[in-house]
Each structure stands twice: as C-alpha cells, then as structure tokens.
Length: 170
Length: 409
Image (cartoon, rainbow over all chains, first blue to last red):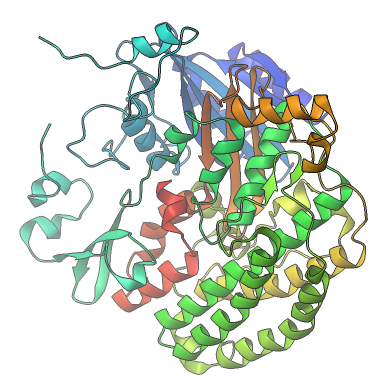
C-alpha cells in the first residue's frame, strides 16, 4: 500500500466506518449503500479523488443477500493514487442512490449497470437502457442470464449449469 | 416492454429544450450510418437553424457482449476477444489484459518481452493516431492527409504482421510474455520506420498546422475546461489538451517505461486544435520511445518460465514428460487464477484502458469489466457541442477520437 493512502483511509474510516481490504496492491473500501453519495463528495472535495475511473458490478448469483457487488474506482490525478469502493446490493429489488450529482460520467456508467445488471439508481436523471435495444427483456450480464447456447453438462458442473438452464414453462 | 424508440417528442422531453416541444427547433437524426460519426454512433440533434442546441448521443449499435463472452472462456481464450474491443489499438488491448492477468496470478515478465511490448505498443499508438489524423483531415475537408497517413500506417501493419502473422488482430502479447520472439527482420524494419517517419510528420504538419482553413475550423471549437473534463471522466489526449498532465506511462510506469526519456505533451486551450497539437506531439514522443527501446533491447527469454501458466516451448514436449503434461493441461483446462479481484490500467492512445478481473479460483474469469476510454470521452460530447455549428460538431467528434468498438464493447 502506498503510504500516502494511509491518512485517506483513516479519514474515510472515521467518517463512514469503512473496512479496508487489499489484494495485489489494490486497496478497496467496503461501504454501506446509503453512504455512497456523501462518501463520493468527501473523496472528490476533501481527499482529491477528482476522477471516477470506472463503475462496475459483479453478480454473485445464486447468493441473494448480497447478490451484487458494485465497484467505484477512483483516481487522484494530483496525488497519483487509486482507490476502489465496494458496495453490496441485495438481489431483490436492487437499487442504489445515484452519484451523478458528484461525478457526471456516472450518468452513462449507471445507465450501463441498469441495462446489463438491472440495478436501479434512485434519482438518476435519465435511466434508460444504453447498450441493449429499448424493448430488450432481461439484464444480460446477470449470471442467471444464459449465454445463448446449450452448455455441455458434465458430472462436475451438472448442478451449476442446470440452475441457469432455461426450461419450458407450463 | 415493447415501447419503440422516440415515437414522439414526449418520451425525450427531459433531454431537449422547451422549444423542441413547441416545434420551434428541429430534431434531426445523425447516424448511425454516417461517415463522420466514425462508426455506428447515432446522435440526436436539436437544431436551431444551423446551431446545435442539444446533442444526445445514442450508443450500443456495436454492442457485442464481449464482457459476457469472456466469462465463458478460459484466460487464454478470453484474450482473443480483447483485440476486438478497440480495433485500432489491438496490441495495447492485449497488453492491458495480459498485465491484469499477470497481476492477478503474480507472474513476472522478462526484460526482453517488456521492451518488445513497449515497442509494439508505441508503434500501435502511432498507427492509431495516424488513423485519427487522416479522418480528422477528412472531417474538415482536407482530403490529402488521409492518403499519406494510411501509407505510413501500412508499414506499421507490416511490422505487426511480421511478428504475429496478423495485421490487426494480433494476440501477440500473452499473459507471461509474448507468443514468440520477434523475427530477424524486425529490427531493420523498425529502424527503417524510425528513419522515415519524422520527415513524414513534418509533411502532415505542413499540410495542416498552419493551414488557415484548418485553423478556422479548429481554433476555439469544442472547448472544455480541465475541471469539467475530469468530472466527465475524460482521459488521454482530450484531457491533456485541457492542461492536466496525466499520463499513466509517466504517473505509474509499467513494463519499463521509467527507463525511457520522453515528455507528456500538454496544452491548456482544451479545444479541437489543442487536441490536434497534443496528438501530433505524441507521434514524435512515441517514436522517441521506440528508438530508445530498440537501442537497448536486451537479449534473453521472451516469456516467463512458470509453465503452470505459460506453455512450454514446442521443442521440450518431445523430451520432457513434465512439459507434455503442462502442455496438455494448459490447452485443455487452462490455468487457474487465485480467488480475488484486480484492477489494472494502461495508457491507450485514447486514454485510461483498464481491466477489472474477478476470479473465483477457477480457470475462467468470473467477471471481466473493461474500462474503455472512449466510453467516458464520448460522454463529454454534449458539453462540447452546445452552441456550435453542425459542421463543427463533425470536427469535435473527430477530435475526441472515439472507436465505437471501444464504446460499446
């Protein structure tokens, strides 16, 4: 971990009670979903993370609570630092507060997450599909969304594939 | 669920002005099949005469589900898809993906492989900027640059073909090193390019840099401030043209970039002309890096010796039992990565290209997310296009240098 990151992590811990995790030099914080907007504001205005590099989600289906794990990747251009913030989202009616008021490029990033994962962003100015056609059904990057071909089932992965296999409904 | 797109102004009224609803301004569709949108970008324009009041980009026409497809392939197979993301920067995409996988599994790359990677990435950057320069010229009606640029690009494509057998979809940089060593003709070909290219850049500059028609079309057009550019997530030359000195090759040197002496060109105006100057300077700087890397190209292995990840050389398979087993394992199941998640970014010709790879311990990535620079750079278009002429809008799109394969993934 870069030593410059220590006071930032401490400030985040004091303000929001975040947990720090590190893997291969990537530092990430775990944050509660309702604190994401003030946390983004603090990161941008007080701690110098002026660039939201990316926003993405991971689906841990069939786990239900939490099912999704949303990553906000911040970059500090002045101090040359990287910081990830992870937020857990439950599987039933997944939603998060929008951060478009803080970082404008979140407008498209959040639309992408709505389109491909079905995570709703409360207060988003323009939450439409962005990649898929408007009349598309389903959210393609979810793990229970089939890839479009029949996957061969072996004894070791029979159950795993059977779970997401579409069967004819009555 | 079957609501059709924009059947009435009613559905898009939150994005256009009051005057569009009363019919005072005109709504015009530009693209997706329009040569100056550089691919399949659709713009919904609200026009007051010739002035753009609002510009609403509509992307997704080239969405190929690369991120989803990568989840169904093992780490070696998934790399082939990265070529198809930003098809003007194929070597750079391989580089970004390989670096993310190397970070995830913790494997070192030999010095020779790192230097060859740098040479090829910089040549690819030059090739990508040449396409941008040629098409930018076309956008503002300077036809001749296009032909010159494609002539020089062809010699870079020849070098890539010499190394990998392919002009564009190379998959030459692999996790752990390179596919194979460069051929003997490589050095002579790159040296010939280094010798020829500086004069050619002078030629392009003679055509455009002080051309009054070009200046008229670019100076003060599509301005964006540095704060807004950062807030919009812009990276790469469009950000550096606003005065922010942010280049990942300098800020967080990877693959031995710290050994090379080069400057990061910046401008402060943030208009179309500033982006043009930044990229022209980058052509020269990239060439400097190529020359330095070639001069001190070390000898040695071109891939890691860790045969749990990198396939053993063909010659060993006949004599070593272990090599045969490794070969069989790697080409059937593939290698497994430890459980965890990494984010790794490189500087592509368009900006920060990052891969976020999540592994659950198996031979296939659990989730791959690509942070593509064009996606965020394109988002800034409505801010740059407010109040310009339609013809200037075309120049602005060209100056952002988007690749739709990179936007839509």
